Length: 415
Image 1: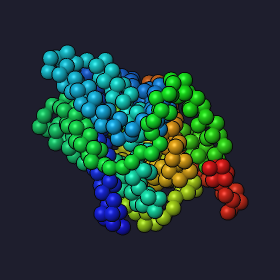
Image 2: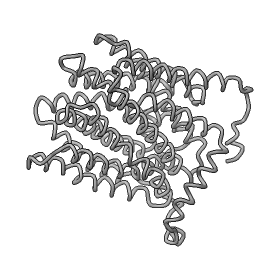
Image 3: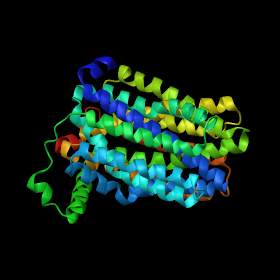
Image 4: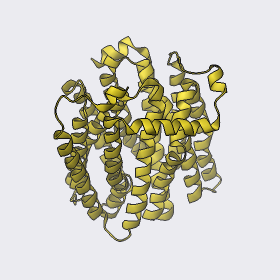
């Protein structure tokens, strides 16, 4: 099934290879930002600060990036952004060689890289539906999520190898090379963009961006399925972000002798489980639904809860395995439903709006739980967050189950 899709659609192959290359670089540089920050400061607050710097840009420019993605040539903007990110990330290597690198350099570059991501990500997501047919999307979504999430198997392995051979700073050199390769692969994707250019594009004003965002927000309020997805995602991500992005690393460093290496190993284990789950999902469900999305969120929350009781290495592996089953099931369902219910002319804004909400939730989570971590242990925070994720998922599952079967989603009537 998967080989057939790739064989029949060469664009899918280049798209997946580009996404995988870019994701590998993101994993490697993401680890470098965390490792270098902790080495420099030995502070959970400063480490949280780097994570916040990666989320704030999406609050400032996330929605604007979606509008621009709907307006401009997507392929061109993707290549330009990849090429801009090369010298930007290499600047950190240069500062290190000159012995000038400090914490604020990490914050600024991290912030700028994510600002570019605000425009790259919605455009990249938008071309997905242009280069695929509807009957291919379940399989290609699975492959894409397998590649992007499953790259965490290769990422930690590469990071461990790099840590034992070169300085952590050259994780950024590796990331720069992936940006170059990503640009080449995107260039090879061939498609026609019908809704761009012309006089209409030249006549647009800055004020039109905000009008477009407002119109989309009004439209979303009338879409029952999309509205439910957005609300639940915000809640689930709020309780997941800090414990997963910062808490897990800090807990391992505090409780194990080789915390950084075990962290990389656990991410590899997580990636392997994600690959298996992603490949199985299209074989079990041809079409994904809101109930499946909520069920995935429930399993995800149980995994986070189990990590709160992880005092030995085997328990860490079990908790991450459970989370790795729920998170891709929830994530794939969300993407599938957005692709299904978003009109073509709203794809960029739809995915950027989704990203905006995710990063809003991320930022609040990092700020709130980063502060609370000064008073409560990481394990207690895992238990609190996991419990709330479970409660939210169960509550929405029960609410959704009470609705009469066979009711046509409200948004389908309005598309």
